[in-house]
Image (cartoon, rainbow, N blue to C red; front, side):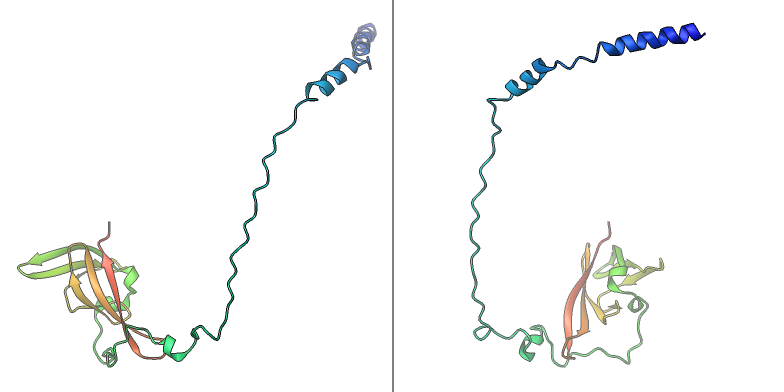
Length: 169
């Protein structure tokens, strides 16, 4: 067993001795000469265009915070929600939580079928109040329910806003 280990050690030492040559001048010469006349191509840096300047003069521009600019253009004076009216079942839900799933028509009367977040199905016609912003159904088509909402503007007046429920896919 000792002879076997000694023989194995001698074979390993002999094979490593063959790798110990330090004469690698031919390899160094090849590496030096192979890329000697090659130059990398570098794209030129693009020219930076100067930004257009703008001279801000607050005295010549309207004041964005003046009370005249706070009034919306669609303000309807005298339009107020009836706060004493008994609320319908669809007025407890935000408009974006309601889903229109279809329409039903009998003669000239058209109803929209609306599903509430709790899963209850409601039949809606023109004149029905809907949503939390005093919405009133103004028109029903096959794919949309048009609603006029009353919201309180930034200066306290009531403003009409158009909204709609589209047919859910």
